Length: 128
Ligand SMILES: [Zn+2]
Image (tube, rainbow, N blue to C red; front, side, top):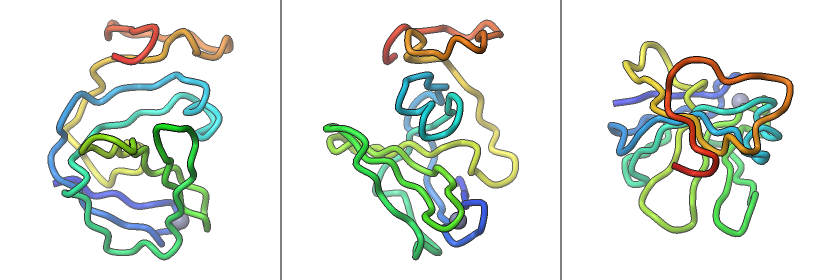
């Protein structure tokens, strides 16, 4: 089981095991919201349980999905597609050791020009 929380602690959750690969997403949306690229891992929507969520807000970022964040401290926490059974957890908000590893970089064609992608993970120009 995974646990996560925002910077101020007003949002806290648990979630089930990952249902897919953890990715680093370099798309324009993720970079603007997070301040850089972001790292996320999918879990089943139905496995997500909130212990606290008073300050959780969902921003409709596009026609296909919403982005969850804490309106008190600004932590970016979730990406949730309207379709599908998964919600992506932003990995920087996970508590403690996760045992998880990034599997790929996606949307590399929208990467900022101010950094290079190191390491030997697969890189996809768009989604995986
Ligand atoms: Zn917060």
